[in-house]
Amino acid sequence: MSGAQAGLAFSVFLASAVEVVEAFTIVLAVGSSRHWSSALAGVGAALAVLAAIVGVAGPALVDVPIGLLRLCVGGLLLIFGLQWLRKAILRAAGAKALHDELAIFAEEREAAALAPAASGFDSYGFAISFKAVLLEGLEVAFIVVTFGANRGEVPLAAGAAALAVALVVLAGLAARAPLARVPENAMKFAVGVLLTTFGVFWSAEGAGASWPGGEAALAPLLLLILAASTAMVWDLRQRRAKGTPVSA
Image (cartoon, rainbow, N blue to C red):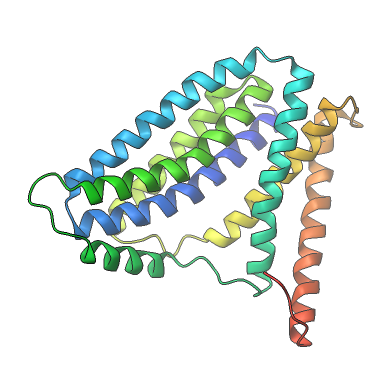
């Protein structure tokens, strides 16, 4: 496996793990408060939709001219990555509340308890589980399809995502509780850096630029983006320490 392939697989794995942790918390809250059969039915329906999206979009993108594909995929990844990175920087600097799975779990259980009871099929549990898995899974599907199609590595990207899903679900089932100890915010910071790195690299390639050393340029580019992001965190912390308002 080349360095670029390893980076691709690691990026997809991390991004997928973050999204699965969030979806797992909601499904666990709904299933434990309502009916597990309906909640799991919602999960299954959402996974079927996501599998169809990846199965159709992946092969379709492979036929797009490589230059145009890299330009479009790189631009989308850059936008997507910068959104993740912005929130991660604000959280690391203390300007935005950290993502708290225990608080989300408590909120979802409270909402589930207030919903009308169901004697048979629980439409509430099905809908909430379906929505949670579909919304979080769409981000995973987007990353799998864009990363995979850009390098012709859809199976590799899908495999990395599947591994993340399996490990998170197994950990959650073993703990029988929200995965609050997972360093989710640190993982989001790393994912933001990785997506931004690949976004810059591929969009520049798609626009006709040539990187010195080819794919070897990914490592110094990643370090540059990581250093800039860390500097932003330090700057925001200094500004907050001085009482300067920071917009989240």
